Length: 245
Ligand SMILES: [Zn+2]
Ligand SMILES: [Zn+2]
Image 1 (cartoon, rainbow, N blue to C red):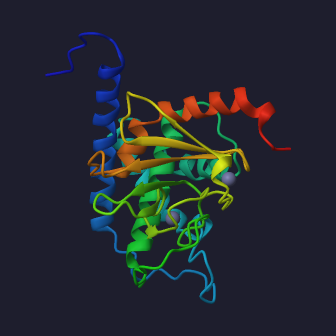
Image 2: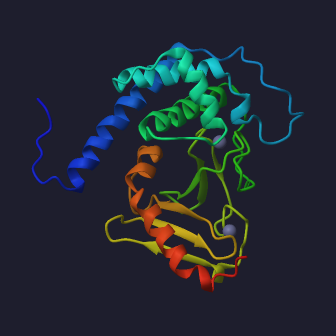
């Protein structure tokens, strides 16, 4: 029983992070199976995108799932306090206890996925608009290149929507000026690149599925978080030469 700490290094902590992620994922899947959101009435958007926003999601469902995740993490918090904390989170005021709020983000995504799966949406083969996500309106996105033909897809890390997009261009601002995009990579993460856009100063990750097989893009996003820090450092260093205001 227990984890042997052999080196105290990154490998040990990453496996602990993965173990925790898998526990949360299993609880979210179980909650989604138990909770049928089919009768949920979303505000009418007259066929406009996004189909819903995070604010449209039922608050009681988010709190219920958040509560379940806290119990799995052995950090049960009183139900009445959760509603107050959720309001703070929505207002952008998060103080301390990062794991608690990252479980709230997971709960929001878990409910958004459940709602998305209930919507009658037909998959399109045509290239779709890039940002924000046309389903949930969030811009927490990454791109993948298809394992067979290299076609580029956009994956929403909130609702899970996946759609084909143009092979090039910044997913945040739509800039197609390839000289304004820098690709950062690391030998530690083969098949993964961070695309930094010099036009808007934002970045996103692109996973080449021809180079590596990925079963869970959400875990892939967490596993490659060190690349975010690298991208932010790169932007800080190069900001003076970027054509931003
Ligand atoms: Zn989405
Ligand atoms: Zn851009």
